[in-house]
Image 1 (cartoon, rainbow, N blue to C red):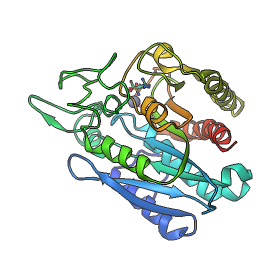
Image 2 (image 1 turned 90 degrees about the vertical axis):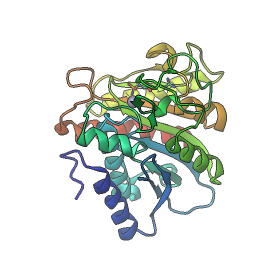
Image 3 (image 1 turned 45 degrees about the horizontal axis):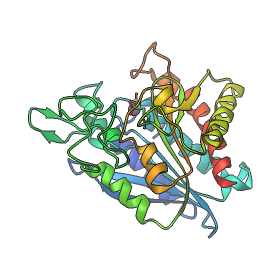
Length: 298
Ligand code: 0X9
Ligand code: ZN
């Protein structure tokens, strides 16, 4: 079924989540939190030991269609967590984990069938298709690094949360009674650990704490044999880009530890990363996520 030796299609990933729910009913539950423009399900997996005091962490992947390493990494982490949760420290066992492996199912499928380098969702707007979901969130929507023209790769949509994919994430996170402490979005490529703000070259009042955790996460990757991951505030470390999910998670929802992690590589293969890199990339991503989760649990 899931091998992590190949990139899998949407249906395979969703069947895998169903399998986990059936096989580990005490630990795993899946839920459809909405639908894409073309009616495909946004399928979430919750991993929880059910303890009432648990803090909550959100992890998503596949917001950008062509970044295939991201959904592969998220499913790898899910699998690892389910199989090894008993050997993790108590703080990590007592977390409610919410995983959305493929946040942009239409774009993901389109990148498999038609255009390998597709980025956006598949909303139709005039001559061009697609809104950049990572410009469509409602914090500082429409500012620097986002576009008004539907033909741009960074088109922000007609308004904040104009897309069903982002609207579903907003509704789920804001209406679920969970003690949200961390938000992690996996993207590629470039090997970066980024935190708010992304909308401009400015930092949050608590950026030192975010920086310390990012530094620890980067160190954990190196210690596990992985490559260097650069860390810093998104706007000044990468480029300013507004309407991102990380800024919304922190600025609107108040999830303290909000990160965007740009996975491998640093440019040799870029988005078209060979599947042989799934395991090493996902292993190091889990090391980084553990560090963030430990901070969130504290
Ligand atoms: O531009 C993006 O959306 C992300 N990079 S990517 O190459 N995967 O497209 C970076 C987003 C960082 N966060 C914010 N700017 N809010
Ligand atoms: Zn991306």
